[in-house]
Length: 439
Image (cartoon, rainbow, N blue to C red; front, top):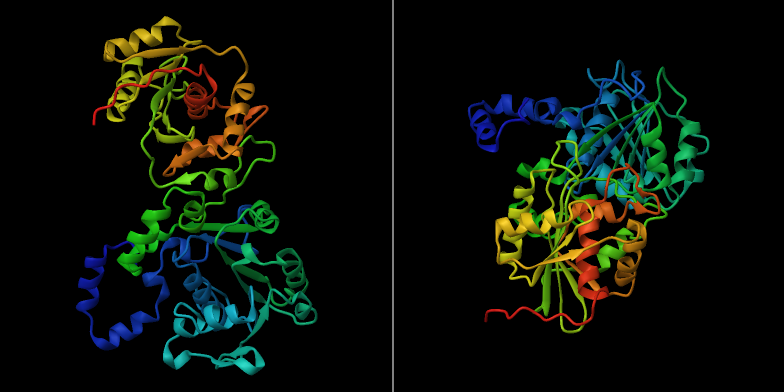
């Protein structure tokens, strides 16, 4: 396979081939495809899959994978089908999407075929016919009723995650997938936490592959990578649209993804005060909780800017103290705010060993984590907090933190540090003398 090779190595190999060999190789999808773009062997239950869900970021190559699968099953190619599938359904969000993306697009079905095997597309009849008699019919997800009556052996569904009538259309298709020995469907979509996507993921008959945009970087313009990937990396939108992650909100969480996206900022204005908050682990054991280290500042209008999350896995006190002190100096902060319930005076002593000139304010918890976090969540609801950039791990904790803590049962160390920082800046004693900043 050529996919694992670097672009220069791939170019060297292709440059050494004769034109006839190149034309032949161009039609060998398995020579260029990544593993995630080729049909899986088994479903989650260990049997043949009924649906293959391809979750991918924008430009990750999922449309090409779907088009090549349709070619493979229509022609009965090894690795795709034991024999040609003679009746295929193609379903997109709209009829224009099916035609412009799935069929005639740059990664569509027609482009996936060699010239001598290319099927005939008749737009007026909404169908594609192969030389061997296989037929693919085109459908819009806006019209689920059109799927009543026709029967199929296979189907390709594109961008199911954003279909307005997704569940209804999907259900209608299932009644028509009743031809052949083992009817199957491929679903290519950017992940969205819709009910139908969750249902397919939970189905033991599903096989799932995932791909991020950068996995297809060799085939994308550098300008796209520089402008789009760099801009959205780490944000909720970027993790969904570029990394292909399924981003969900917890129903009883104090924060939602939308709350955080609204609070996104590219930079911070001059700040009146800056603090580095530390939520130390109870021990330095390898399985201990991580040390939360979060920095934030407040401007003259009372708006808070979250500046950094440098939380680290459980380490010896000297290690996390060095990180906190370094962040304090880099941001020219006013103080380190440290939670002392676990370590008492030891926390301040450890920071003093790293730098005796770093001022430490002790924060002692008198209420549970949820009660401490709730007023901080209200600051977000009031529009008084901004995130300068994206802090994926911290934001995951925020959107998974409810009355019973995190859903995985672990300690919300990053969130705890955030709460201490924002409490000190906006909810603690009102009179704080700002540090004299260098001009």
